[in-house]
Amino acid sequence: MSVEIKVPALGESVTEATVAKWLVKVGDAVAIDQPLCELETDKVTVEVNASVAGSIADLAVEEGATIQVGAVLCHIEAGAAGAAAAAPKPAAAMPPAAPKAPPPPLAAAPVPAAAPPGANLAASGPAARKLAEEKNVPAAAIQPTGKDGRATKEDVLAALASVPAPSAPAAKPAVPAGPRTRGDREERVRMTRLRRTIANRLKEAQNTAAMLTTFNEVDMTNVMALRERLKEDFEKKHGARLGFMSFFVKACIAGLKELPSVNAEIEGDELVYKNYYDIGVAVGTPQGLVVPVLRDADVLDFAGIEKGIGELGRKARDGKLSVADLTGGTFTISNGGVYGSLMSTPILNPPQSGILGMHKIQQRPMVVGGEIKARPMMYLAMSYDHRIIDGREAVLFLVRVKECIEDPERLLLGV
Image: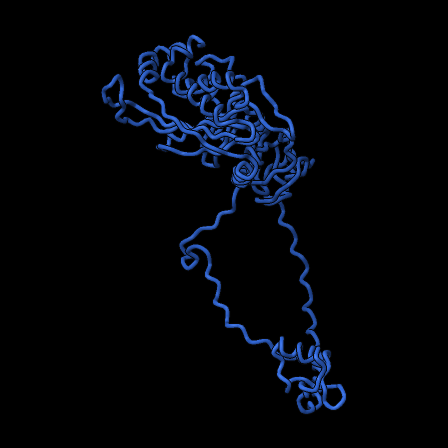
């Protein structure tokens, strides 16, 4: 019995996918739940598994094809031994096409009669004279039809149409953009669906939002000391590593509660203020940047935040994120510092109105209590949509984050 394997439902608003890679070929034996192919959507990559054991009878679509949810991917012959499927019969050879008859010879163009002597422009009407002068039509090119060799306006127009235009200089051959002369040392790879979506969404943010970035710097001394003192006990008790991200999530939530517009979005001609805090955490993967969402982060403790971020990071690297993991965030945190970035201007993750950029921790000389001391400093960048967030609110938000990080007891006591 032949069983159809179809594109499964991929989440709300997702109607199509691209066949990124086939993991089987025709004739392969497969077991129940064995991955058959990888489908790539605008947000995630998912595997489609076999619903029955048998052998692959055919592959209905090729790699790279875009198909709708519910479309047939392949057929499995249930219970078959997995021997190679019979090769399709070659199509019958087509008889050679009859040679085309040669095209009929072109009719010779009629030879125009010899033109009479040039028009007498001086004796012609004023309209004809003026037109000939404006268009620089020589008298010899005009075939007059008026009385006594006089040219009419229509004669001048006819001559103007017959005068060949001056030949334009030969155009230089177009120089290919980029190092095309070294094509043998280049590689062309089709953009993945995820990469195209990332490009489109980032450009959408630039085209739509009135995006602006404000900066500050934060002294990481106290957070680093607290983390160093308690990280072993924290890991033993909670089974999770104590990182800096949980401190920044907590600090951002404190700022979002005080400045609700940073946690809002524009929908049509309305402002939507959100009384929940779903924090997106940008994660770099081999397939591209994804932003899984930590739900209701305001009700989680430090351990819950660290565990949640760790789980989302693992799912992102393994390609196991679902559409639900990537939708509905209210604010985003991006940590370019893990790659060594010292300063950047992060781009909004639409329809959100704010994003915090963390950066590399670097020892810098700072004035502390009237003395110059080396301090572990981090630059912070806050990009925001100026349509909804005023500069005052953006600056106050970033200052609030700075205060919470430099004095982490505030986070523990909720002040």
